[in-house]
Image 1: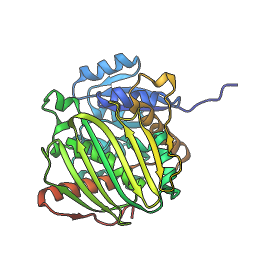
Image 2: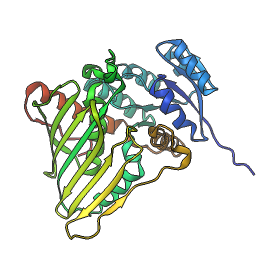
Image 3: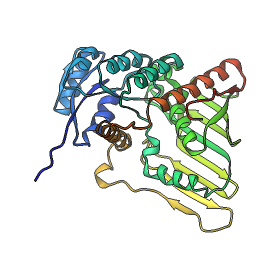
Image 4: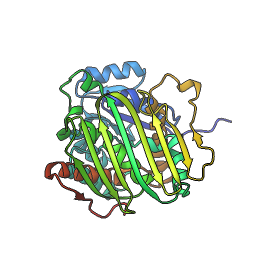
Length: 350
């Protein structure tokens, strides 16, 4: 006997990341049904529908939200435009799937979080790295005290984005619009570092960087007195993402030198007792070899949102996590403006 599966209609606002990653991610769950797209230009929405082979193109995001067939609104647009769409979806009683950062600034992020929490709206924010099996293995060892007391963490994340390579006039290169290295990549970094190490207490932007638009060097101090350095550069030919964590009992490294943001990570733990280093990595299933690695990670989050809707329990990461990251981004911006250390306000995760 075939079990009946309740399906949920998915409406996607945005046809860049929304069509390339979010739609195929939701499509991996049999409970999801893609109802269609809307975009700034109707022809882009129509092209996304044609490529997917299902759903419809909506002339405006308000039309998509108003469609009773849609249960979940996935928003993949520039951060400066998210607030109005997200709050309208909440008021319409829809669940929402959001990208990071939540907004271009702290006020917009607070407004989204307040609306979502006030209406008890099911929601998830697309922080993908903790979804990776290698990351989950690393978290298990870190939280199991394998490295002893953590003393220092270093992040080196350098990429060449399409917008910088082709010198595009895009929001993706403008921090004031929610773009640039800190908003695009720092949002992920702050989120995963707090999962790994704990709450960040202070942030400082070093001024000895080549270009504050593409290259940022940050120092952070955590509540547990762990220190950290974060190098973010989205205009570099040196493509790598490395996290090095040093504790009293050893060292952990997570490394990815591939151009795919999520495929290619491997981990190694070297303990101070001289034992054989522990290496860990998760090979991809053959069916995923040639796909964007973000799809599989996002699929896990999409399924978690659906699980939360079905069981009536909050899913995570959610808007509370997104607001926490936005606070850290705001502190980073203020440190850059004032050339000083900035204390992170207590609350949320503390």
